[in-house]
Length: 122
Image (spheres, rainbow, N blue to C red):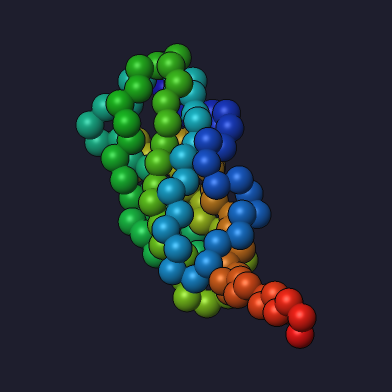
């Protein structure tokens, strides 16, 4: 039996503000709560169309049943402004998705331009 449980976000907390085109390195801590080891053929797959630029699937790091693992996906923020959510789930070699979905939620905002300080004596 396959199983995956989300434990915590390791990077990019939900609602993080990023600039257009920024690199987003999202990492999740998960536990293999199934009875099968994750080996060759196990994937982490995107389950939603979301506007973030990146892979649609990646290989899962090998993890023995009952152990913790880290899942990592690197995205590029879109050039458009707004809120973006990308949802992912583990997939067994037979194509069956299993376990908790994990996601990244970011807000793409324009880069802040510093406000000029008034000149002394001016």
